[in-house]
Image 1: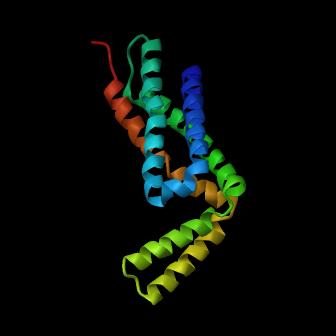
Image 2: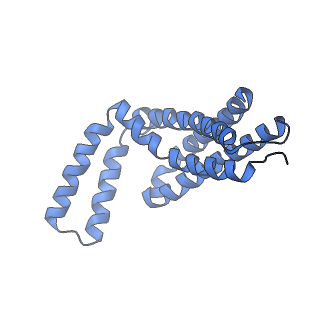
Image 3: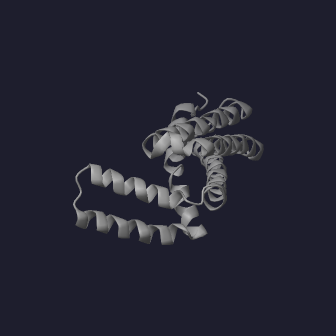
Length: 170
């Protein structure tokens, strides 16, 4: 199990990191609305390796697999991939795109303004974003928030894959 988890986890993690780093030069052109779509599409694609990892483990185990064992393999692959995702975002946020929080704040305020928010609502939003930036600039908080982005997707793919790929002898 260890070899399968490490192999597929490292491939998924490296792919996740590469896809994130590939988008950094284009962040301004992609924009925040499309960035979420591209980002979650990339997350789903990298977590397809969870399915293939579970399937590989099943085949190495003589063709049988319980849900629990499949889930264990999948969640470990997911965790490795998430660690790569978080570490890569730390580099992007703190080294490559230091103005990200300010850019996102400007985007959020402009979006609220275009949706008809009044001045009080805009002032409240500015304060919320400033408070969030203070917290987000702390690496541990940043890492925790960043981990929450891909993990639910990986958990869902792990659960579905373990269900679909389970096979017991008859």
